[in-house]
Image (cartoon, rainbow, N blue to C red; front, side):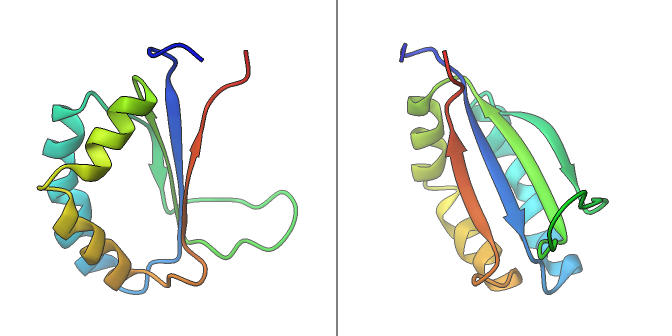
Length: 104
């Protein structure tokens, strides 16, 4: 894997309080994402499960320029309080963040 291989983060979230999630996480996240070169591929509460049971009510796919960029984003001091805000606003038993590297 090259240092410049893009990495995708898939967020599957069960948001308990959409208003506090938007205000306390989504809105301040934009500036952090911009700083780290993150591209939002999709972020939506409008989903349709083609198979299986859908437990999340928000899905997002973010594209990072590299694994190093994702690691720097996650460790950003401005992002650390947002982790707690996200975890507070979501059901952590059904919410996951998954980092994916495309197959060559």
